[in-house]
Amino acid sequence: MSEARTTTSAAAASTTTGHPANPDPVWSKAGLDFDDSPDSWISVAGNAVLVPTVNALVAVDRATGRELWRREPKRKEEDYSYAVSGDAVVFLEDEGKPGDPALVEVIEAADGRTLWQASADDVVVFDKAIYTVECVRGRDDCSSMRHDIRSGAQTWPAPAGGSVDEDAVGVRHRRAAAEPALVAIAVEDPASTAKRPWALVEASTGTVLPGRAEHHAWYNLAAGDLLVATDHHVSSDSGDCRVTITATDARSDAERYRSAVYSGRRKNGECQNMLGQVFGDQFIGVGTRIAAVTDSGAPQLFDLATGTTVWTGSGTGSPLDGDDRSVLFSEFADQGALSLFDIATGAMKWTVPDQGFEPTAMMQQRTIVAGDRVVVGGFLRSAGGHVTVVFDRESGRELQRYRGYLGGAATDWVAVYAQRDGQPALEFHR
Image (cartoon, rainbow, N blue to C red; front, side, top):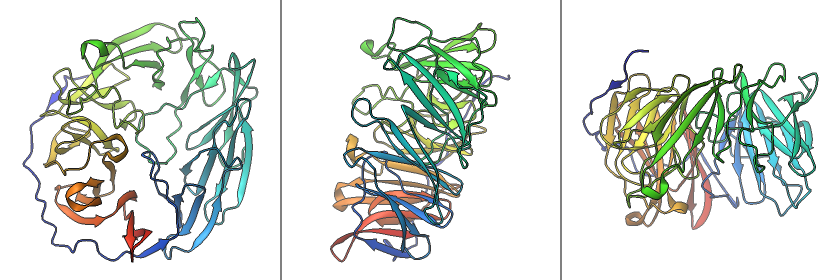
């Protein structure tokens, strides 16, 4: 591979919109007790807008806002989550009381019809498959099975020994992560004295490969044929924000490299530890390339498959969001100016000033990079509430500003929770 590139900065983007603030939505819907937890996002599957509320996942018609169907947790006291794969919706309930299983139901988004459902000790979701994990003797002896996501059919001739894990590269916002060819699996109990409990299993066959990695209580995943393990607390006592990365050949068990990237810092100087937002997904990036920070605090793109830096960006920053085209960094992990980098070249497309959003964990800014837009929302004290701002991806020019909490966005829509006639309502904008 050629040497990593170092990029230069771009001019600050204009923040003039020329559009009216808070335009009327395509539709608004009152009476939804929406879930405003940091990792709760609205998604669209086909013509269904999926709205996570406190007590149910509610699907409404994209054109009118009319309710189509809803799913409530079977165990009322338990939280639920969901993921979208094409026109299918995966509804998940985690384990309840000790001994209770996790519950999974795959739903046709258009009409709410159940395609299949199951229970297991654990459930892992990718875009093409669902893995169920069954354990005996607590968590000391587990096996995993792969299922086709739409039919539920088992695709392996026999279960694989171990517990499959869901770590992946790519911010999802409730979109199911792309299933890799090799999936991380814990073949021994991570809580035991075993030092190398992690391996990779072939998604196509269920064969567990011989390479092993140590357990560090952080992330384990495949990068090509490499088993990658990360440790984010190596030097936290000394204030070093290092994230160590080890890569083992999954087939030969030979160590291929040891390297390090760094997490960003909050404005108070504390290490973020995560390579992204506190409540975000594990890795921002695409394929085997992840957004991170250099030892000097500069943005970088690091390739897990080679253990090398692809490019180093200008300035300082902490990764917030991204997709296969761009990576969004913030000056500090919890606040500061925003900068967008081209993921292929590392060139800074634009930077905009700090929007002034509150940096506290429950009020931190929410971001979505999608289509031709970058959408950022947060609590703005000067506005007396939450504000959602839409920027043009190419120029950084502010396109629109809504009063309301950013619920979700994609290539051609933005959803915010706002106040209409003194009542909380979901607003759907195009």
